[in-house]
Image (tube, rainbow, N blue to C red):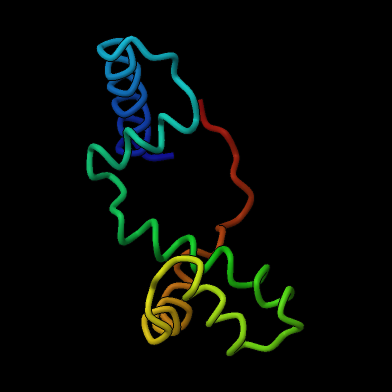
Length: 106
C-alpha cells in the first residue's frame, strides 16, 4: 500500500475518533458512514448510485429476471427516476464492482 493510502487511513480514523469524542458517541460502523458523508468523503449522489447498483441484482431476482420490473421497483423504493436508474446501472456497475480480495495492511 502506498504512503498516501496509509496516511489517509490513519488520518480518517483519528479524525473519526475525535469526531465521536466531541459528540460523546461510541464509534460504530453506522456512525462512520455518517461521518464520511458529513465530511463530504462520500456524497449523497454516490450513496444513491451505490445503493441502486448493489440492490439491482437482488431486485432483479425477485422480479424473475425481468429488467423493466426490477428498474420500476427500484424507482418506487428510492424515488429515483427510471431513466436515472438505467444510467446508474449502465455507467456504475463496473465502477462499484469489488476489486480483488481486500487484504488488511496495518
